[in-house]
Amino acid sequence: MWLSVDPRSPKPVYQQVVEGVKEAVARGLVACGDRLPPVRELATTMTLNHNTVARAYQELERERVIEVVRGRGTFIAASGPRPDREDRVRALTAGMREMLVEAHHLQMSDDDLLALFRATVDAWRRERGLVGS
Image 1 (cartoon, helix red, strand yellow):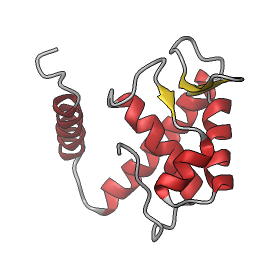
Image 2: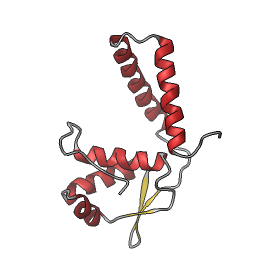
Image 3: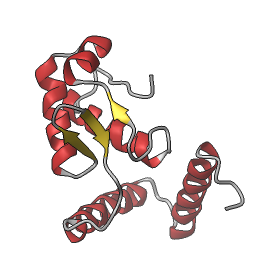
Image 4: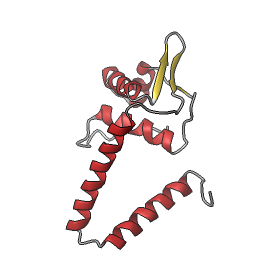
């Protein structure tokens, strides 16, 4: 399965599910319109409490990553303009600042950090089959 959680991680399990679904979408493992398993089915498959999966789905729906169609199921949402884009860009910027602090304490130069970022982007693109795009 394309989704996994680490029960020993300090990160809450529901957050791992949220991030796992978002990563799967970003990596192209699931696409717009793909149906996700029902909460109880996913909970059983992953041996998680169904309330944990329900909380993750609620968060994903709030972030407009998934959409619930009553009577039909839960689907990966169509991508489009996001009303919360500015808030999410601010959060992304904060995360990048945290990386800068960590890089400083690792005594990485700006060039080393940028090279690491470029290598990570290149690896991401290769994993998604986007080499040469």
